[in-house]
Image 1 (cartoon, rainbow, N blue to C red):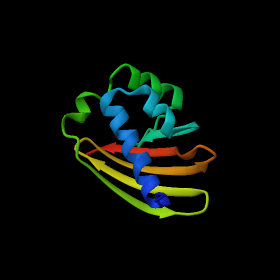
Image 2 (image 1 turned 180 degrees about the vertical axis):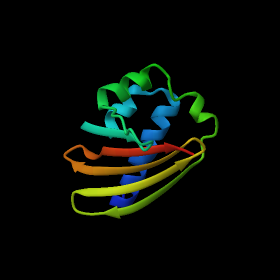
Image 3 (image 1 turned 90 degrees about the vertical axis):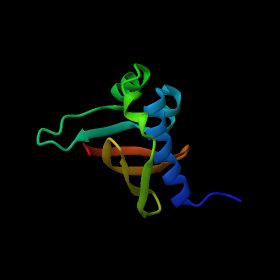
Image 4 (image 1 turned 120 degrees about the horizontal axis):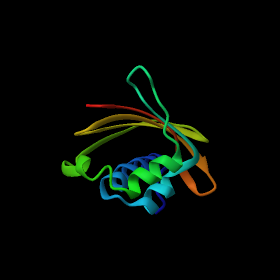
Length: 115
């Protein structure tokens, strides 16, 4: 049985967080779109690219954040080529926008804040 788009979007969001917590650069690479734009919702926004996210993941920056691994993932909308999901963890509140690619769902945009 093949997974539904909702399940695939949820799995992409889960892989993203688990890759961060486990410092799994290869897994992170598989879920991020090459043109990722990630911003922190703190007034200045800032900007993280896919390359920077892979570097931070490789360096284990998210390991401590994974002490509590519970994730609440809500798939908010799924269209033909785009989807959105909201993820809450012990550390982060993050809104993800995903695009369908030939390789599956990839995170194109992320806006986050600390919880």
